[in-house]
Image (tube, rainbow, N blue to C red):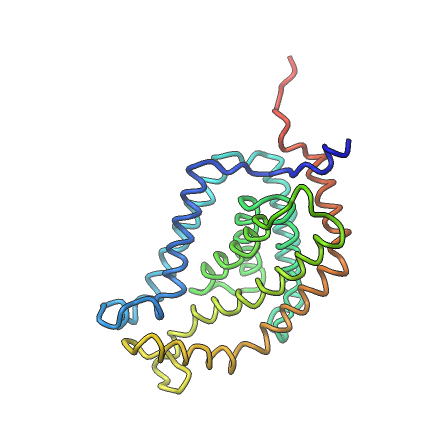
Length: 272
């Protein structure tokens, strides 16, 4: 009985095709977020005002390919039901603090769900939850696919943390709280990269200057983060840590009980 309870359950088993799709969209995502710092000063991309819009149009297509590949590799009816419940819960949590000093309680649920249900489920859940919350709050815009990808990374990363079959109890909760804090800060940083190029025309000391050396733009970006978003990123991390420490044990227990009862690993049979 103990071995059955401790065994990690994956709602989605990632195959080669879905892993390849995840790696592809993550690589393109790194380019989409980091092109202002990655593009050479002599390249056309560094001087193009259309680059953010190009990536904003490309990312939804790639996300759709990833979700389709993961679904094709084993997203059955039980996993879809679990995904719908958790995505609805995440979408409902986000408006509770959206726009208020970075208070976003959905982060702790995405981290805990990714931890219990695995990286494949976590990526889909993070993306779908952010999409649903954008529809719920009216936050649809060119930034939405970037938010979907970033939240997918947050939840997927929780599923890749070490020791899912052995590390339980207080140590696991502390690890998840630490991961949630770091992920909350990194989420704000990468989303800053998404919006930073749009203020280039302001010609301030913190704006993106196309074609400038990497060191100069990187210094401006750090100043931009400190001046504009740190007041949101730190409260987001604090809320995630607090919610994980306070509610984590109960939520982890509930999620694991639900996955055992769902019996994702059990083969589907039909009676005569």
